[in-house]
Amino acid sequence: MRNPEQHFFEWRKTTPVLVCVQTARKAERLIASCEACTPDLAEIPFDYLLDSLTGCNPEYTDYVLEEPAQCPACGAILQTGYWRWSDSGKNGRTAFILPGTLIALKKS
Picture 1 (cartoon, rainbow, N blue to C red):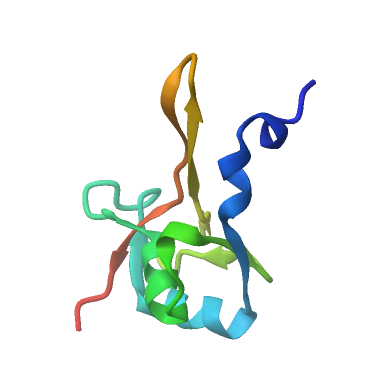
Picture 2 (picture 1 turned 90 degrees about the vertical axis):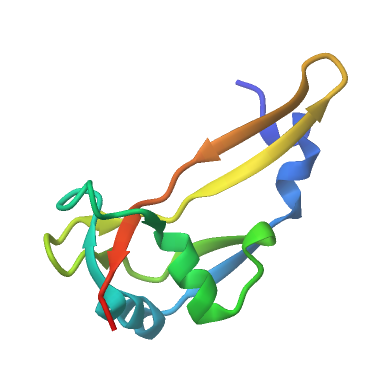
């Protein structure tokens, strides 16, 4: 099996950011539900909440959770996502997407 990072060089331009347990718990306290328990209400990617808490640039950040984060309503594990662009002379520009969990925030 070939290594896709050798073929798609732009994949290397992101920065992994470790999300400590305290930040993950802070995020959980702001979440009302997730796409597993309220699919009609969850519309914000979990990563967007992490972006606002960490101040990181979403375009160049991949989050790594020190411990799994969970939905406070149903206990489902919240996943972070990522996307990469690949430019190929033969195939043009292609997006590779692994979506993160969608969430609904608590009302302030």
